Image (tube, rainbow, N blue to C red; front, side, top):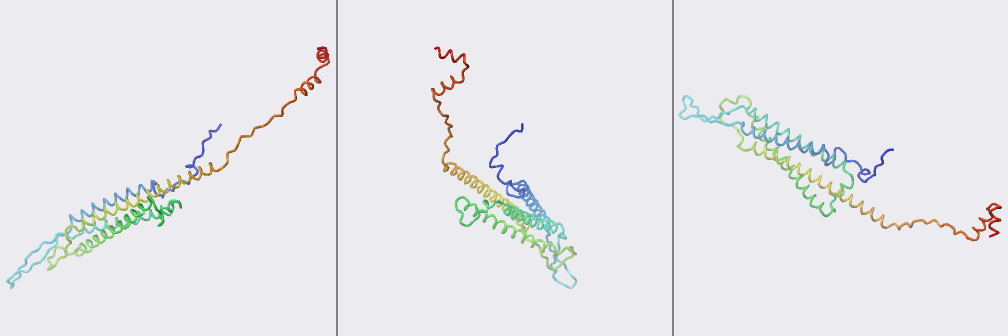
Length: 263
């Protein structure tokens, strides 16, 4: 015989989609985002170390009493330019993928989860909404500042790709610490994005817990509101002893009947 299993609420509840919060896809993208942010930070540090520097020289021409000051770049700037461009594109791709996934996860969430983000919702969801708003704004601000710093570095380093060793009267160089600051903002961006994801995941778990408690309360109220059913007792008609004795005498054989009459 086939073994019967009990059906629970977990079996009747809709299964969590693979693109929802708390799924393996979300955990993988969160870890990948942090690793990519760390890689962008390393690229920015490499660009900071290899950034172009300027050496000033005094050239003396014939007929001039005093020499002219000219500058010479220490390198062509290809290495910091490549590192900064990779960090710029990598950080942009990370932000697009992470927020696109979060939009898809929110759109695939059940309606009971979306209720917690309503403006009039109070309780623990109110603090979660403020946390999510902080993480969202801080993520985009940090992302914008990091990208602007990388753009400044790209524009400066791309200005002397050719004839960088030729002395010139003026040289434009990047200040020390610009690429490092961009790397810090890039790493901060991915950490804030991870915090935003964890806040949304926590809000979903709270809403699902509230939905489960509400369902149990409704089921309990329905159970106690229904009147108790009394067990049905079947009544057996009582037999008449006189009728039973007469009935037994009528059905006895003649020998037994004569013996009964003699008694």
